[in-house]
Length: 140
Ligand SMILES: [Zn+2]
Image 1 (cartoon, helix red, strand yellow):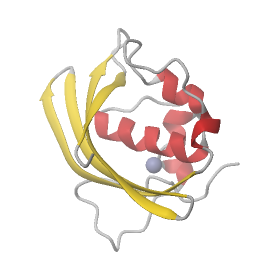
Image 2 (cartoon, rainbow, N blue to C red):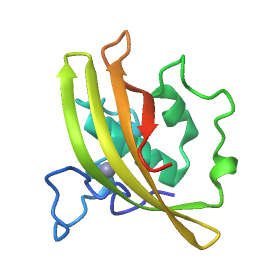
Image 3 (spheres, protein in one colour):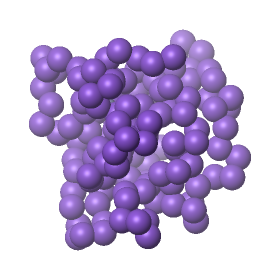
């Protein structure tokens, strides 16, 4: 089932709370449906968050470095998680092949609200497309 508004909300450090969310078709759908590739780590971050929301595990696997992608990645494990929103705090370009994105994702499990605050590392694969490597949790 396709969302109308993009679950990522058009997250970016420049986004203001009053900004209207972009339409899914104009935002992350391009990447998740394979019509385009994210041009930077922040776009990839948004599309991966959206993939979690809509439960698109193949997209998560395809955009995850082979060395760090969990073999048991499975949507059913997250079935109780309800994602509430994404804020991007920082997008740092380190060099041509390395970028970092610091974000806060809000979610609920069994009615309890949680925040995941992570600084994620991204690189490019052999086709020069951005992929996720791993992240440092900021609020453990
Ligand atoms: Zn989006």
